Length: 115
Length: 113
Image 1 (cartoon, rainbow over the protein chains, first blue to last red):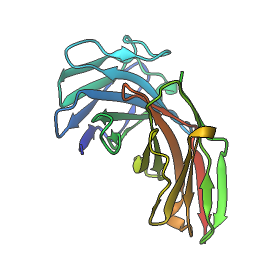
Image 2 (image 1 turned 120 degrees about the vertical axis):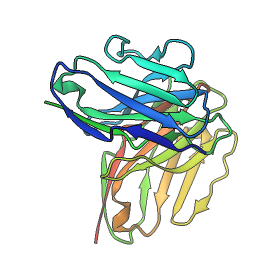
Image 3 (image 1 turned 135 degrees about the horizontal axis):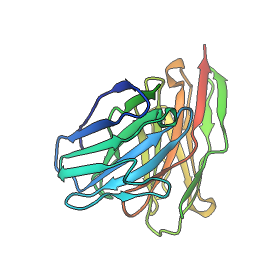
């Protein structure tokens, strides 16, 4: 199993500013993912955070807007840059321990409101 | 491309009634994994069940049961004797070989006393 600590749990930010969300895992994992959940919507994958290389972004998401760092196998950050009210969402960090794992593990989420 | 469809937007039941949530998926992978997650109003995702594509045995776990039918690409989930605490959004998700999850739109379950 994996325990994920995600910070901050919530924040209210001014438009035009940036917020960095941290994700700490209690064990080394290869696969880390960042998801976004807009209000009343489902979860959408933003990117795969790769250790030692650039993140792999899904269609509709770009590095300039959502830069991701993955300095080691237990930690990752997601930055939401130049925020607008449309960025108000829950952002979730997730890890996958491979096909043999019973589940994909999620952090508690960061509830972001942009005003 | 993978796709997960949860056609039911909201289901309202009275306590003790059974609730069945539908999930239909599309994938070209021969090996894949299906999940059900619960998201209560507090926002965290709670893992409920997982099923591998190569195991079609249906099981019951407490008040939860699931019906996985590969022939119809369906992975339905049932809550027996619902309780108010079951009120939440339920997501069906499909894991591909790279570990990425494709989520359905979610079904809001409302259980009233």
